Image (tube, rainbow, N blue to C red):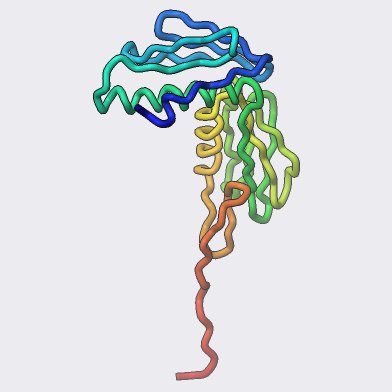
Length: 187
């Protein structure tokens, strides 16, 4: 049996769970999430103990993988609707900055034009420091969407290895390269 899949998911009091045909819906203070799961997987919700149990019908390799995956996705949904997820990014570079205008993120990254990114539904972008180094916080209830939008932002100007300019995650370590070596003396 899957070590992860057999563990029940505890549901806090502020979250509401509803099950429909192969779909689980969770609602909490941070938002609403739903997930459609495979028909071979069965989900049971114990209202008295406030636990979600994930079970599988077969013991084949594919169902074992689905068992652990489904349980992990549901656990992430529970954390997402109650606490939420966030990623912190830093924009390092002279003249680089970030602004939020309505439902759009404007990034000035040294190009001849500003980079416009539409902020997806359910994602919130906070800017704590707009200039060098600019600090962004991407937050939301869906772990996958938070990570994906953070990766899209980072992909607009990944950090370069010589000066470290670009967009990086908060605790990301950039392996730096040595620049040109200067030798004095004529040949």
